[in-house]
Length: 249
Image (cartoon, rainbow, N blue to C red):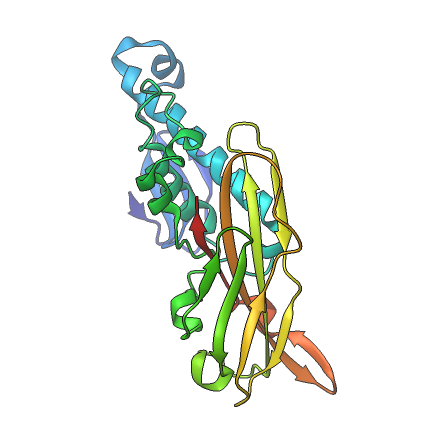
């Protein structure tokens, strides 16, 4: 791989050279590699096919989770959340000790303690890590999904981005079946607070316990706003909003 230093920015293939745009600018590499048909049929590439199949299963599981919590994640994510979550789902998949190689999947891996540990604590916005945003202890009742933050003083127990005047907190309780794709997400009412010196206990209780079978996932979301003339506007389009998967069972 080499950088392309030219006034003309080229993308595409020319003879044996492929031009493309990457994070580091416009790049060029030689065309080559094993053909797709050979990888699909040659016994020598059996491991490659198995790895590709399992990667696809992990990516699909990540997509299931993202879509299941779209209402929470829409304004609380970073540009690399898809690839970051796929990497974690690959770790979860690796804990499947039942399925044959090439068929290991998240639905089985997530039932193991190590699989749950790999996903637990995942932050959907790496610009806003929950432990760096909320500085108070967070208590979770896994039976109801209720989250309690006791003696919460926004100016002292929270790292708020510059310009924010208010903060909203929401909890989510999700039941997701990674085999069937069935999902049920229940959210708590939003608690909106001014960012001041007032101390209060924040209690976030989902509307109900989600139905169905599958993995139970518990979320906390923190969103920041700036009030102007009595109206609260999302701060920087949610760039500093935090969303974390607190627990998975």
